[in-house]
Image 1 (cartoon, one colour):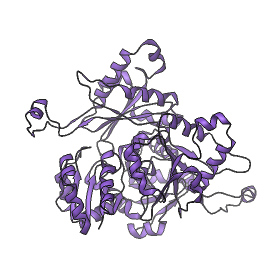
Image 2: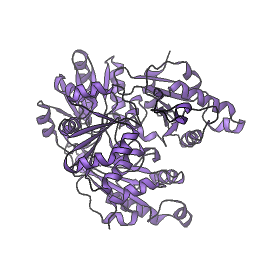
Image 3: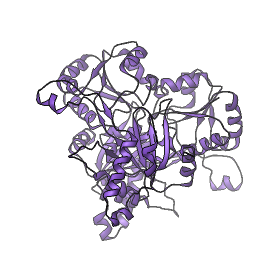
Image 4: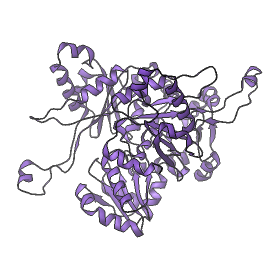
Length: 273
Length: 273
C-alpha cells in the first residue's frame, strides 16, 4: 500500500487538509513525528479531532522501528504526520529514501510551513535569501557563522528568515553519562534570545564589519505562533527587540534587507508606538 | 466581521484545510482570486466540493469592486480564496492594506504553496537562495536579469527556484487598441520553454561569464503539478531538459547549487536512465 507523509500545518488540528484528514481516518496506523518540531496543540487534541489514536514517533522510534513501520506499509496504508510540511527537515528525506529502498510507494500531502507562512508579515517571499538557523549558545560553543549569511543576503537587498533552535528530548550530561533515559523538558529559543545573541555578535565585530553588516538599527521582525489565533508579530530595530514579549513558542525572526514601499506600509501595523 | 484570506493549496479541492473549509461554508460571500495563478481543478469542482457558489475575482473585479467586497465584510464574513498560500503575490498584501484602511479585521488561513512544496524533490528548503521569475520573451523584450540572481545563488552553493510566467486575461494588441474586452486563452510557460531561454542566455555569454555562471551541464529539476496525483519531477542537465515532456501546467524549474549527499541520493529517483 502507501506510506503517506502528511503535513499538519502550523497551529490547530483543523489546519490539516481535508485530503490529509481522509487518509488519517482510514490508515492502518498513524505516527506523529516528534523530534524536529513541537506540536503547539498537543497529541490529545489531535486524537480527539481525528477520532483515533496516534503513535508519537520520536527519533528513537523512527530509527529503531522504521522496519516495522515499512513492514506494515507493505500491506496497509501508514500515515506519518509532520508539523508544518513534510519536507522541512532532512530526516524526512531520509525516511523516504528508506521507503524507496524497500519498494514501498510513498505520497506527500503538503501543508503550510513557517518557510512560506512567514509571508504573513507582508515581506515578499521572493525577497528572501538563504534561511539560517540560530542555535542556543553554550559557555563553550557560540557559533555565529549564520551572521555571514545574513550579511550576504543583505548585500543583495534580501531578507533573512532565522529559524530558532528547538531542543527536544535532551539529556543532562549526568543522565547521559549514567545511561539514564531521563529527558529534560523541551526548550525553544525565543526571538528575544536570538536578538540578544545577534547584538552580542555586533558588539564583538571590528569597525569595518560593523559598517558593512547588519547593525543595532536594522529593522527586524519577530513572529510567534504563526498561523494560530494568538499569533504575534512585532517589527522593531534589532536593539529594541529584546524588550518585546511574544509569549509562548514557537518564535521566528526576520532580519530585513531592502524594503519595497508596500512591504514598508504593511509592516506599519506591527510597529509599536 | 472578518475578511478571510484562505489558501487553497496546490492541486485538488480537498487540499483546502479543514479550518478553511469551515469558513468557506459559513461565509456570506466567497471570492476566488483568478489573476495571479491558475486553478488546476476548475471552479466547478470547487463549487461542488464546497456545496456553494463562488465568485471568480479577476483583477478588474478586485480593483473595481473591492469597496463592495469590504462593505460586505463590515457586517458579515467574506472569504477570499487564493491558490497556494495567500502571501505569494504582492497583490494580496495590497488587498489587506485596503482592508486595514477601512478598519476591516482580516485573518489568514495558510496552506502549502510552490514556495515550500518544492521541497518534495528532496532539495532542502534552507539550501535555496533568492527565488526568481522567468517571463515569456517576445521579439523585442528578452530580459535575462534573473540569470545574475541564479549565478549569485550558485556562488554561495544555493539552489534557485524559478517561477515560470503565467499570462491570464491577456488582450491581443488589436483588441487592446480597439478597446474590445476579448481575452486570449491563458498561457503558462513550460519548464522546457524556460530551459530553452536559459540555454540561449548561455550561448550569448562571453567566455568569462561562461566559466563562472551556470552552464549547459548544470543539474536542473523540472516539476509539474506539484501536489497533484499526476505530479512529475525530472532531474537532468540543463541541456537535456528541453527534451522531456512534463504534461499540463503548472511547471516550475530549479537550478541546483551544491548538492548535499542526501539531496543527491534523493534526486536519483527523478533521473532518466
